[in-house]
Picture 1 (tube, rainbow, N blue to C red):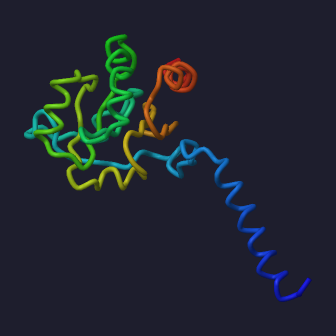
Picture 2: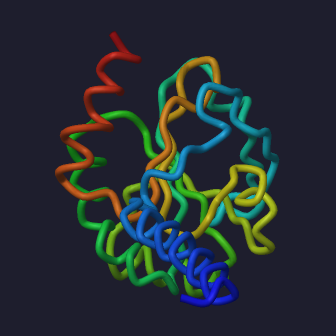
Length: 175
């Protein structure tokens, strides 16, 4: 075989190997550099009551969930009934981060599908989402009493994720 053909063939095989490894990775398991670090601060208007300002400091002293959502997000529709049921169960408070959405659309969404949130931060330009390293919606963060991010879930929260990952961590943090 011609040696000139071996180099391109070798490079092609290496690229195929990298592609094969990459295709077997789970995109929901992207490690967040923020886990174990203080949650980024924010000071923004409430979605429901724009005259009220929400700040991270207001959440200190309690374990809480931050769920990033938007009315235009199809996967958010999938997880929404799970969050509504969890909120009714009396677990930890859930705060929403309404991400790159129009206020009118977001309020309509909550009216139509129910509101699991104690309150929602209104993030029209996505700056808070950027600070939290949001890849896309939905994403959910578990934040402890000291304001430290303990877990990040990328994608819709399912009953299985809630039962197997989030609730055990919440029990541990509240214990």
